[in-house]
Image (cartoon, rainbow, N blue to C red; front, side):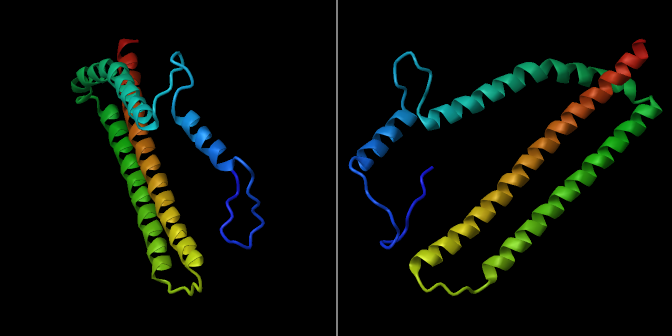
Length: 172
């Protein structure tokens, strides 16, 4: 990405055709170049990506989930399986509490920085400071949402693995 210059004093030299080239690049970035090219406008592409993920999850995990749920009643009387499941539950709870603590710590840091009175003698400096706070908030939200999704996926994978290991142990 090209560095943007924010003041009249910056050494930004306009080049002939810059505006036209940038508009053309924007149009080609979001629209297919030919009818055979598989590219959709960005909102449609994002929605399609989510739809494909949901289809994948539904098709690949439904059979696995049904098999796991069917095997669970047999483990109710297996004391070691119950202990392992309990230990896994404790580990998940500890990770969740850690994630929550990181969220609270991040919010506290952001709140503290938001409460600081800064001197901005120009509008551009003020806007820069405010956008920095917005970016910090988005970074915190992004990292927490990603970590929560990762934790949920790990719980699912580990629970299925535990059940399948136990089921194999009973058969073998």
